[in-house]
Image 1: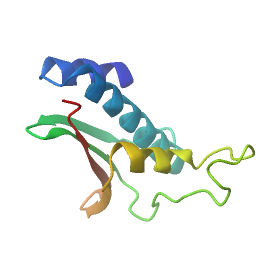
Image 2 (image 1 turned 135 degrees about the vertical axis):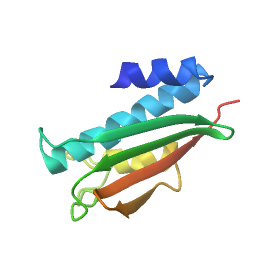
Image 3 (image 1 turned 45 degrees about the horizontal axis):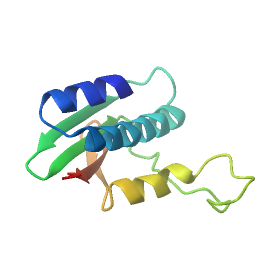
Length: 114
């Protein structure tokens, strides 16, 4: 998924740095959805180059399973998870959850590095 994300985005004009950032965001969102929904639940991933950067959307069929932050401090040596949403906040501030007819979608925007 990560390789395909970068390849497609760069083919449509994204710069290497923005494509690499999108790879991290897609990886985090797909990983969260897979951990929450299970290995065999269909997910839809959309990545687009826009006039303002890159749009990323990950759809899953479980609107009741919302992302949540770890109870353990993110910078704790004992934290096994919970860093991803902080990473998402840094790389794609303003990300949001929207509910849809098939479940929910996490939507975010990555500004252009240029």
